[in-house]
Amino acid sequence: MTRTIALALALLMFSVISASAAADQAASRDVEFTYNVSVTDLPEGADSAYAWIPVPLSDDYQRLKGYTVSGDLEYELVSEPQFGNQFLRFDLSSALGVARFSVTYDVQRWPQHAGEDSSGTLDKASRERYTVANAMIPLSGPPADEARQVAGSELDPFQRGRLLYDHIVATVDYDKSGEGWGRGDALYACDVRAGNCTDFHSLFIGEARSLGLPARFTIGFPVPLDAAAGEVGGYHCWAEFWVDGRGWVPLDASEARKNPELRDELFGQLPADRVAFTRGRDYALPGALAGPVNFLIYPYVEVDGQPFTSVEHSFSYNAANDQ
Image 1 (cartoon, rainbow, N blue to C red):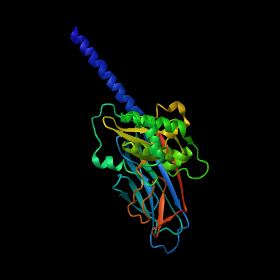
Image 2: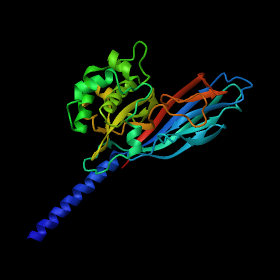
Image 3: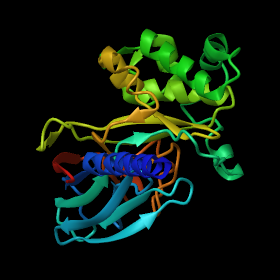
Image 4: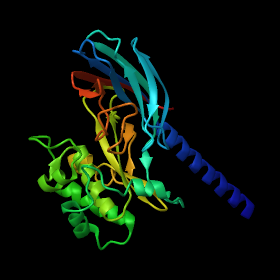
């Protein structure tokens, strides 16, 4: 009798695990993301002209399966060492005034969640990388003062992150009016109490780092769950902070502000409604001459080593849930 019960329990546990694994697999999405670029008014006689576009990340929650390039321009895949971001670098020097190309990326994306039983710790180099200041994310001043007031007395790092998140969601408006928003400026967001996703998450990252929590910035594009295909109007970004024993804890404070009913769901887990492209701030593009970029998600072009702005872009996707 005991063996029968034990066998039944084992079979039940196996079925639960199998159902859970199947649910996780069904929740993944295959996404074809198309990135279109048009560069116009290229000057004649330029010694050099290059364009960089980002390549989707591959990590525990996303896999780049391949990509297809359309157009007759020469290009190469390049990587920057600080955060491991990759880019396609197109040589525009052969174009006569206008250069057009597109890239379709084949990506598999899973929902992202913080681990519950991980014993892993962050290596020293990564901890240092994600606890330093960035050009627009200081570790002192008003954001640090606010962080101490909101979460300075909390000792548990996971709860510290939650307190910071809740406060930002409650007190910062999603507002793209006026000037100053969209640069990922933590001081702007702290002072004006408004901005877009870059500003929300730069404020969170600055506050978290000021309390000693490693935190990082990730940017990509939204791929809505309720549509199998469509145009993408612009980028979206989010943040993660590290907790020993849990790993990287994801959050999306700007979406939580826009959708208050999702506040709990967008802390510690994120749906597969996005494709991540680059991570980090203030990094150098391989081969670029004009200095580090704040972040990169839209195409970046240099002509004779200087930023060039006659650039247009558009994005679209086709997506399906795995079965």
